[in-house]
Length: 228
Image (cartoon, rainbow, N blue to C red):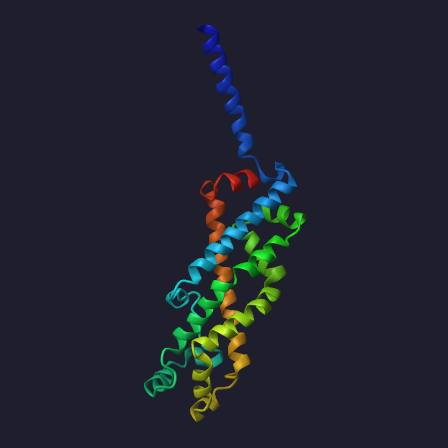
């Protein structure tokens, strides 16, 4: 009985000594494990962000990421009310946001590819970064390339929701000609919506990454083993 109790104490002591190792700093983890864990975290963060933003009305519902018309028209509410009553631009802002949501729905493989192409060195550096270290890195190194790839998705979506026709109607209104810097061309609208959609996507990915970093247990055993 005494031997059993002694063995039990030794077992408990061994386990207690091992616990700190499981929560030791990331630098003690093999580089490959860190890189794999970071990729998994960012992949899930991007998927989560895109899932949320692709829900009907999600972009429009969140004022922090809501897509607006380019240039001075962002604040031209009186003019938009007039054009809406005239039947020229009814729900145009919602249509722009619906287009952004459609693009987000199809953007998963684009972000996944960018994340998969991160190097081992990249992953190790991000592992010890801040709450949005991975997101910030992804935007800095791949943001322009991602925007170029997502732009066709936005262009397609804008056509599907009828936004281009509405903007053409806006361009025919002489009252708008006095608004300097206004680009109501097809390309101008596409570029503006793409840029705003990307801002929203990265904002949401950052929020998801921060959440996962704070609650690693919710990410499951695989991620936990990969990073911690």
